[in-house]
Length: 261
Image (cartoon, rainbow, N blue to C red; front, side):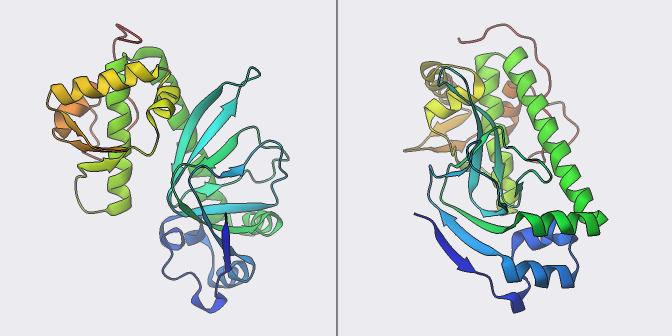
């Protein structure tokens, strides 16, 4: 069930992460006031579909809390996860009449939604807003290329290690309190397998091998503790990247030796 609430326009979203870090930070005080008059805050449960190709997209959203997965459905019914998005990402495709993928929450998430026509008008009026949306689109393109490289060139061990590093980095950005060790994997083993182009058995086997090697400790449900961040980055092929620790990194190419072992 989705819970919706009107936002108080007088607050101007002062305490909102998206207001300061996301696309809303590009808006003027007048635009924020106008947007708040039409904004709704939604709390959605894990597994709830937020967008899909069969729905007309009348409202855009900003993720305030939680995470969502982007998926493509193949003609035979198989599903491929093609990306993950977190707070304070923008959800929507301005000026596009169609959505060719589905968006589903993977955790309980909070969204702030706005009328599509209002956002598109503000994009035309505000070059900084257009600039921020452009940068997010470029970031998503880079992530898609990184995923393509991971699926095409990395071994199963490197793929799983890369996934763990990227999730840990995202957790660091969310918390902002130093290097993160205990993380929630967000996805089930089946979803991780789908995301990485592996089987469930291969994902489980590689996680246990990383645990046996002293790099991680598996916890109940979707929890995991990273014991040795540097070695894990080495396993992922990321150790030579000049951007330190848990900053967003492009995936570094690695020699392909195996796919599912």
